[in-house]
Image (tube, rainbow, N blue to C red):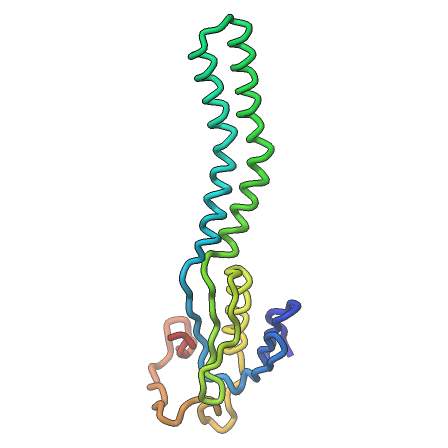
Length: 187
């Protein structure tokens, strides 16, 4: 048995896809596809807040310099206001690294709910729904590999999960890579 993916709630092996306590034998899965939901405004608002947090100290520094010029005080007071403003602006440096990391993680997770579906025993079944795009991609690709590498049926028949109403795929010959083309399990 080959393990393609394994974490606390999902495991994809060459024999089965197990997600949140449910197991689906790979031999019984006829097709695999995914769907994307609508965008999450909460995630987008969080990204905007991170952008505002990055710009905040820079805007404060620019306002401080503008205030120092507008007040027309003594050179010492102007220099103190400008110096403080520059220090506030420089404070964005160490904070920016942390904020960019949060922003990067936000894009890795994605802003949509993603669903992985399979045709199992002739019926569509929702295998996984998550908002974590990185994890979803890893699980989906692992499931694709498990489907691609499953052994052919020794009788030459379609898998048990394939619908009887579906005609067999026509033979297209051998491709330029020397391998026979196989249909992808995507809609």
